[in-house]
Image (cartoon, rainbow, N blue to C red; front, side, top):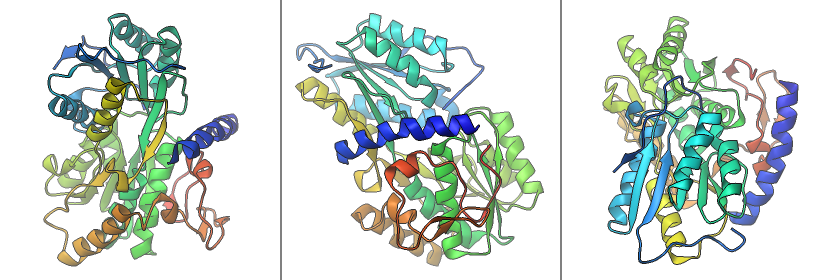
Length: 383
């Protein structure tokens, strides 16, 4: 794992440089299904033709989580640019060689924009982008770019922090659980942001982490949540693709915090709120720029103020005063008064007690993008 950490630190240096100049996950055993219809000099679209856009998904669109949220973005794109775009998608694509085959097939069929939506699609996307310089590629959550390859992601840690504040107010045992996919910086940041929110309002509370080592596996996700509940947790948060952890919480009479989409629809008796993604407007922006011939390679990391991330409405069980607390904090993020950098402002200790960020100092983008340690209050380790 030490080697992995070194690699993360090296590659994120490149990411941060691009990020600052620009200003500003996932394996599954299911086989890929068939597509479903529904550059130094930047490649441009023929204005007389519809722009053909393909989406590559790691899980089924019915996961009601990560992939569902991206497909909502695809549908939003179709609605807003009706008559100007033609979209298709393929779901259940495993990371690795099969992903590269799928991406290449779309490029060979003449799709002018291919959006790949799993961290593990990064290398396959980059490989195919080299072969098709007249095609645009957008990869979600990675760090590699090229003349015709952008990377796009969002600061989901902002709504995660506020969801943690809500959870910290609602716990009675002061023990919260977190079902987490892989120990990579993206997931570690989210756990830490949630925990910082919890302890901002409830310094005695702790957050125990269970790793599933999968993005999409309903059975494993639920089993992890059940184990946390049996260990005393009365609120279950998650970085997983399905609502199964929330369903487990509801079955045990506990609370939960969903992810990716508003999971209160699947577990209305449990879900306090859910950090959610809003991909549609960004997809529209990219496509409009491609059609206009003005799109350029970007490393995009949007926040709440950019309308890329949000927090679902509070559940009926959340008291008015807690809702008001959340609304006040949300307003700060939407105005830009608060950001991911204010969330990660010191003093911050790790969960061994060592100081990581001094009082008054904020973590840099580089440090956040390579985060490999847990804040104080997290029970678990980054393995």
